[in-house]
Structures are given as C-alpha cells and as structure tokens.
Amino acid sequence: MLEKVIVCFTGFLTDTSPFCCNLTNFFHYTPSLLELHLWDSTLEYLIMGGVGDSLNNIKSLKFFTMSLRNVKEVSGVVYLITSCPKLQHLTIEFDSSGINVEGVVQFLRPQSFLYGALKLQRVQVNMFMGLEMEMEFIKFILASTPVLEEIFFWNFVYLGVRSGKQMIDEIEEFRRASPNVDFIFEEDE
Image 1 (cartoon, rainbow, N blue to C red):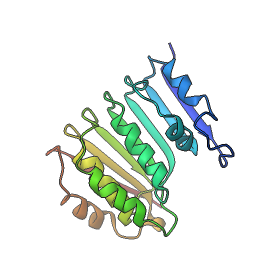
Image 2: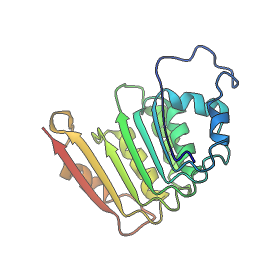
Image 3: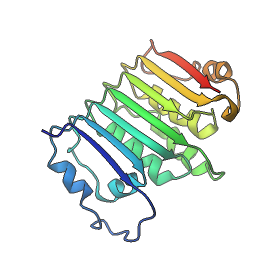
Image 4: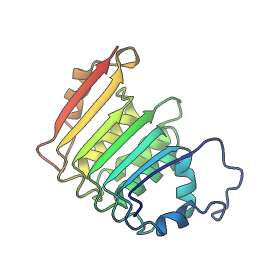
C-alpha cells in the first residue's frame, strides 16, 4: 500500500489542456494515500485535472513554495485543503514575492466562510512574513477549521516585516471556528 507521495514538477506548463498529465489519474489508484507533499508548479497540473474524491484518506498535506501571487495556485490549495475530509496536519511554505496580490486577497476573503477542513488540528506555516495575502490565508484557515489546536509560524528574523508578537496579536483578533487555537511564532537568525 502506497501511503506517502512526494510530487515535484519544475518549470512552466507547455500544454495547458486538461489531458496533458496523468497525475490526477494516478491519485485515483492510490486510495490508501495518507500523506502528500506537493512542490513548485505541481498544483497547476492538479488544478487542470481535478482530484475528485481520490484524496479522501489524506491526513497530512504539505505545500512547498506556494505562490501567494498566483490566484490559480491559491485556489488549488484551498480546493485541496477542503477536498481532504480526513486532513489533520497541514504544512505550507509561502512564496510571497510579487506585488500583484489584490486578486489573491479578493479570492481569499469569501473563502473564510467555507467549512471544509473539519478535522484539521495542526498547521505549520514556513516563511511567514505577515503580508496581507498571508494574513488572509490565515483567516481562511482559522475560519474553516473547527478542531484546530495549533498554528506554528516560522521565518528568518531578517525576512520579517513586523515582529512575531505584532503578527500574533493581529491574528488573535481574527474570527475562528475553534476557540482553543495556540499560536506559536519562531524566528531563526
């Protein structure tokens, strides 16, 4: 039984048709999959083909270098989070570079009222700087996770726009579905 899969595609898509990749078909044949790691532009492939109910058993989902400047990628992450009914652990590494973020912020605001990650307990967010689109993503997580226990934020000190305490103070004011969420912020030099 295959329980863990790590998928990484680099580069740009040359064929944008929904049939250019069999990756989505692969997931239909892995019903015992418990852990999935996605890197780089893998989300673009998944968005094109959809995953349906093929990820019903996923308990741990990890997104590395998730671009918060790409509405399609962010919508793909939201779709996957809400499509994994048994999801308990989520790890995200933000790539917040870019200045065209208004589309992402506008997409995330209404998502804060969706429930989908009903069993999500722990979230780890790497490379968190407290930028507007990152905060909107955290609002979505907090509003849609009724059993969330902990969000762990990590970043390098020199990348921080604000202090960890300032960001946590702001996040603690967000509406949340789970009343007992612990926020942990760690910065490395």
